[in-house]
Each structure stands twice: as C-alpha cells, then as structure tokens.
Image (cartoon, rainbow, N blue to C red; front, top):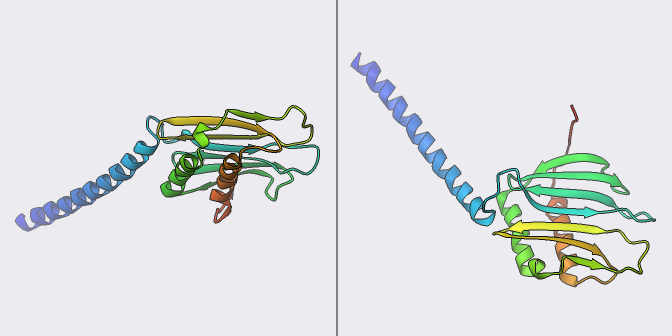
Length: 171
C-alpha cells in the first residue's frame, strides 16, 4: 500500500510541477502583452487598416489585428483574396506594429489628411493602439506625410510575408 501511495504522490508532484511551470510561462507572456497593451481584453483591437475603392482598380480590403494574435482580413474588390480570412501572428509581430508606430511618429500625426480637390483616390483608414496610446487616421490625399504611408505599408507587410490565411466559414 505504501508503494502505491508513493507512486501516486510522485505522479501528483510531477503534475503540480508541470502546472506551475506552465502557469509561470503563461503569466510571463501575459505580463509582456499587458505592458504593451494595458487594459485591453485579449480580443480587443490593436491595429486596423482599410483601403477603400476608387473609380478605377484600387484594391479594396481591410485588416484587423487583435491582442490575442488573431488577424482578420476581408477582401472586397481588386485583390487576390475575395472574402473573409483569418490567421494568427506572434506577440512579437503584434508588438512590432506598436513599435513601428512609435518609430514613425504615427501617434503624433494629424487625425486626418484630406485634399478636397481629389475625386478619384481611395481613402485609407488606419488605427493603432499601443502602450496606452491610440490613434485613428483618415488619409485621402495625394501627398500625405511619408511616415504615414510607411506605417500603412508596414501594416500590410506584417501579414503579407508569411501569412497562412484560412477561409472564415460562416455558420
């Protein structure tokens, strides 16, 4: 009977060690994420990019990045993928969006860049939330600040490199 109890105790101890190590790892990752995205639930929006249609063949799509790493793409017109797709990115890639926004001065840009004389340009909407900062920008201008265009292109690049898009099934 003592031998069975000692095996049980050993197995139980191993289980507790595994749970402890796992919880420390999860807590560490959560702490890193919370430091960069404070007060945001795991499914909250971190970044957004939408390129709207124009009178020509402008690509029309949107990309949403969530704190959990979930990324949703919706292709509407003049893009390779039409429909709703999703993928996942690492916390490092997610943090790189915020870091890039800080590096480019995205949070210091104006909320809107419009040229009222333009008639056939797409509107580009972007948004980034990082380390307590949040910025939404509407861009409808032929000559926007270079750092705004750099940030918009970076949002495209984050998922263009190696994204494994999965068709979102509507049930």
